[in-house]
Image (tube, rainbow, N blue to C red; front, side, top):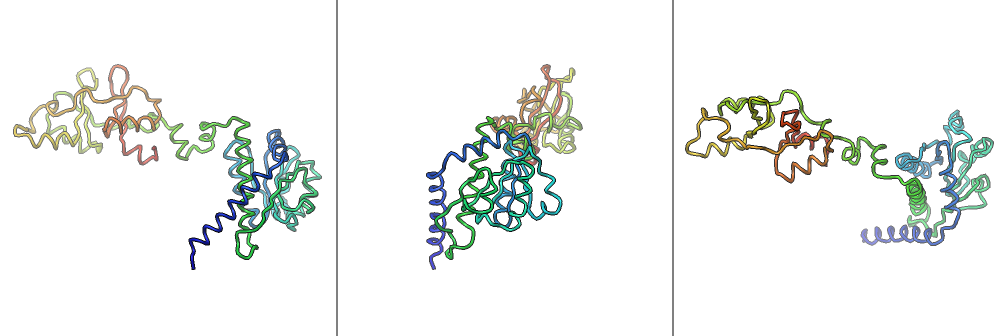
Length: 320
């Protein structure tokens, strides 16, 4: 059996379904967007079975892109949760047949509240369509299922129409990356746009030695500090150099290496520093990678040490 061919046929059927929906889209879609935009409450998505699963995903997409939304299961609505819907809300009800028993049971109550109802169904003569103020057509020529029974093309289309609504609303609201990150502070984008150097830098227990320190004592500080580096400051507490374990390893190859030598003999003088604690952590990572360093020292304008930021910290926190 050629599974690759079957997979291609499945994708082609569903892709054609989406293309047909795009070609046949009418002005009802514009009206639906306007109704949701003018909503002063929340967008409530409801449906059962596969439609319910699609509805839950739609609600999550709307909620994360600037449209307050939640999913309400019709069965739960019949047992008290119907009170979660108010006249200021808008309801999107999903049922491919338009005759889902559980969903049909709550439609009269939704209309009793005076809540705008947008139906998503294939049948404009169905119970769902009759109760709806607007109907978004979910029409497919055939399911991708070889029996033409299991919801495949129809669920794909419903999900895509939900995405299309969400994108229209994002455009209408001029929803930006920073807005998206506000709803996803723990996600990758949120970390890029909100976490700053000040949030991640180490400001205590920093391994620091004076400029008169011997190499053997600096090595001890490197080991105790667990940063692979020791900072060197002058008598005015200003950063003048740093010594990494790599510097020590390279120094060991020199014929005149001495543990009693001054640490500055093997130090990196005038190392890379950052004076801006409000710099985004993602930008600090770019700087670290560009300069091929592991430790970025944070100082004030007078080069006095305020903290350090290690590349491992950035990686552990998911900064990219």
